[in-house]
Image (cartoon, rainbow, N blue to C red; front, side, top):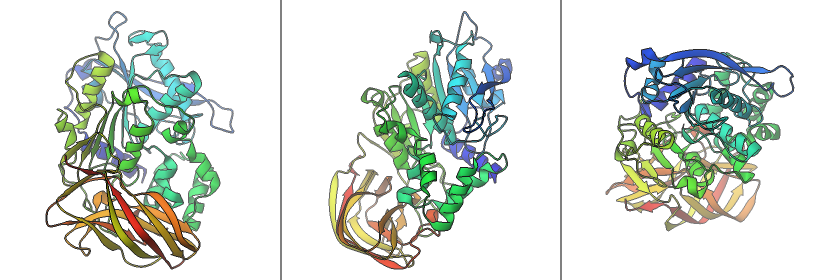
Length: 511
């Protein structure tokens, strides 16, 4: 299972951003050095932990001609890159690269505290300290290398924990540009939206950590308890709550550096809205104006079967990323290379689209918008569903042609009959309620404890999407008592939920 998850993370990222070229002649001239740095002990222990790395030095990098550095790390359950050919597109372009095993994986010691700023945050800082003393690495000042980072999923998480932990401790970060893909804003929102476990992914991620005993016992115990009860124990919530940008944003921290975001619109572990929130909330206004957001049909993608999704087949369609070509690159990897060249080397690459969201629709068209906020309100009347058991129900919203790009929401007065009432919401598209498919495979829960009568609920999040509804088809709101991603964690007592006077807020676009 560990191999499956590690391979899945890599293949999903490269499917959205394939390798730029095969092994180059220059790769053979790259000097590689393996080693480990000593970092802080695991919490509750006293033995220092080694974090192991491979350093790639281009042949022409010298003290007299220093080069910028790019950090690279792996997805959950994976390990560092040791083959110079795999990173030759960076070293050929004049970057040094350091790839490292995160705590609990590969050759590194300790256990994985899932990007905790007190643990993995310190690990990343020790790695930067190592980079900073290399005489052939370009520096802005002593101890401060010219530094970027790449990586997807857990490999995006280290970028944020490293940058934010430095800001927490010193007020600034030594990173100069980041390129995170398919990563999270909030782990609790991602794994347990409204406290409802995303069963499939929580189980898979736990299994991926078993071969190296990467997870601390508290996490195993917490996931087991959540699986047994359908509720997230407070200690597990607290363990995960600060392990992402959202925890730092709550403390008033923002990144003031440019970031190129790649996020999967069909990702049902770290969905599109997680990346959108990072772009909107984790950056200063100044940084956002120098940053770019690209959404593509990829990521941690499991097919949606019940209810069925618009991107249910694996592998995904070949037209996954329509926006990198719109921005002048054949794929996201090339876009990332241009972004790093511009921000670390000061080169003009013709890059554009700053401060905007570039989203690939379910059918493979790129939509570029300045805002993903709702622009249009639609009154739906009453929406009724069972909870615990039953079939999905699709309510018509608007006839095509219409395009939606961003983060929809709804307001309603909720009434429930049951104990712990859980239903799942999503936009869907079809010619009729019978064939309506969930847009880009994502649903989000709406949850209400006990019996309530006409309780106002405002700003209820629906999954962020990008979709063109063609003429002859209809946009629906699908309400379901069950969802694949939370199998077994709908309401455990049969009941009913009514949403009265529903107002649906849609990010309609003319682009």
